[in-house]
Amino acid sequence: MSKFDKIEVRGGNNQFGDNNTQNNVINNNHHHNNSAKNNSGDEIIPIIIGSAAGLAALVWWFFSHIDQVYYYLNILTLSSGTLSFFAAFILFLSGSLTKEDVLRFASSTLYALGLFGLALLARHHAPPDVIQLSEQVKFMGFWQGLTDHGKDLVVVNFLAAIVVGIAALFVHLGAIRQFTYSLARPDRTGFFYELFSLTSLFRMRVVTVVVSISSGIVWAAINGMLPSINA
Image (cartoon, rainbow, N blue to C red):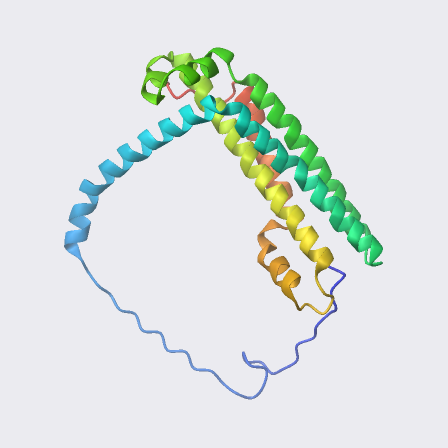
């Protein structure tokens, strides 16, 4: 980003930039444990069963608390635009605002509003009778009371919410990256620069890819374009 000063690193052709050389010695130790291989097959079955039961309970919990889930999801989504606005405003006050910063703010706001609308569509797509059933019974009774088509709808709506949540988290962390950048020192020192450095995964390019893929998955889910779990 243009706010930071350029730092030139001069040196020789080795790692330390002088005439020193470095010798790396790699020792490979191989340990064989045949008993662990024999027991892995017996251990994986309970793990699969436990994971499936946990996922089934999580889906039931999601539908029985669906309004609360989407409430906090919408807060996460819309707060991204707010953080990005404050980042741009701070840069403007400090005289460091560039065209790229404005584009990042515009992109964050657009993604936040787009994901907010996508979350509304996903919530509207959730069947009211399935929500009512989840509020009346525990998770075993919930799955027993669903038809094959109802199970497909449950999985699709749960998947849509998870994907929107992942995309919203990336957008939010991308906005945090912008905010820490606006507060970081130009000489690349201090607390906020350290935070900024930790968020390198959430560059706008990465956020754009995640939002694009997530939007496609959610759109396919709510339009019945995903394969059935009962096929």
